[in-house]
Length: 163
Figure 1: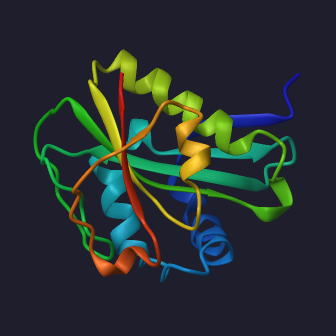
Figure 2 (figure 1 turned 180 degrees about the vertical axis):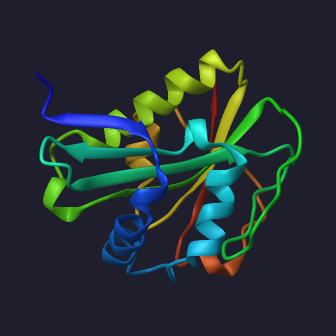
Figure 3 (figure 1 turned 90 degrees about the vertical axis):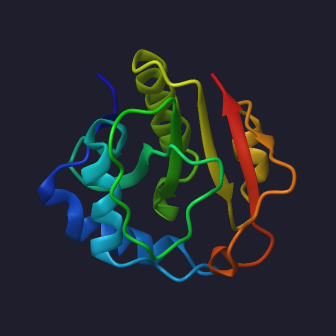
């Protein structure tokens, strides 16, 4: 029996998601609940949570369709209409108490499976807080000349994975 459970985010998870976001982000200002929920509403099937056997939230991942060539700004609600072949991986947060348990890896692997099943051609993201090496292990590559807003903090890096 697995010690970790990965499933779509539910309504009941939001208080814990907000607490985990505040715990994980020191270099980037946490986003509001309304902004995060707008990502979830756009694509509930690609917004995932990881819990331990006791039900404690260990991590979450928010991703949504993104039909534009550029990258979205933080702190903005978006309404995404219609299908597209690109996902934007908006957020991956793992509790410090869960580091080394494979939570981030499991969430990303689950997203990649879902994205492929949906026929997505690519996933883009902005790497923050020195996480570029983590994303590179999944095959994400830096995007050259990406226009990134200042809200991403110090040294953000736009990255993309062709599926």
